[in-house]
Image 1 (cartoon, rainbow, N blue to C red):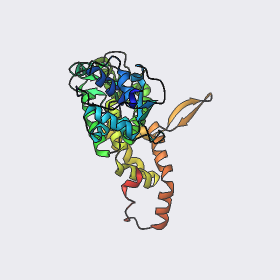
Image 2: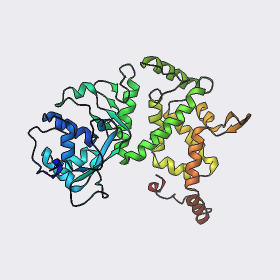
Image 3: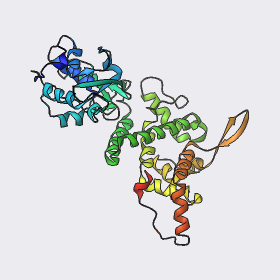
Image 4: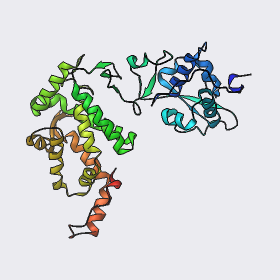
Length: 335
């Protein structure tokens, strides 16, 4: 008889799941805390797997379960299924491709994982690597001031810690972590495009990044920027990108009325007015052996927003031509 066919019973030692932890990481910790010979024994007891089980699964994999498998995990842990599903992203949705009549689960590669803080994990029962999703668990351990993705010490860069706190509030305010994370990714790309040209074009930002790069351990310079070097500015720009009022403004106003958006970005980045004028100017780059003008990266973002809502904007001005006080559509349409 397979372990998943045996009757599930409550394990003696109860282990609390960490918010954002993978199901595999949690099950392995639970197995270690209860002195099982191999953590895969408990994993296999959850249900019939769709592939072979090895300890290496903890690094880059998570599992999707069906209702029977979730019920068994609830019994093993003594923790209500609702609480388990809230803490473990892998349980947010049950896998409807699995058999319905038996407990079963499907291992699959998980993206955006990093380790829990080693110093915090040392105080927990079951000394086992804890893997968490970046989207649901902070990349920063505030207590030990460590950037968890690459173990960077942030003791000398409090502005990065402050920015991470702001980003956490933004995630809570938007209520859509995936969308907000996408805006942060885009904002980071834009600012990392600025960084190599900052010495000549935006000297105040360049000086800020040079000072921060010297305070960070490792190699961080504006000429070879890293996501951590530009993180505070990326979060500030993300706050702008997630502001539905400004997204509606960019989407709906006449093209010549977008200038105030550049001024707003300059203000949010604590830059002088000439920074806004720099944002409006196209870049001159060597393309196909000739120097050609290309949009500033933030101009490309604006163009995408305006293109996406071109139909809404055109229909609005056709219906309300001459009525300048007519309000624009609700902001929820511009996410």
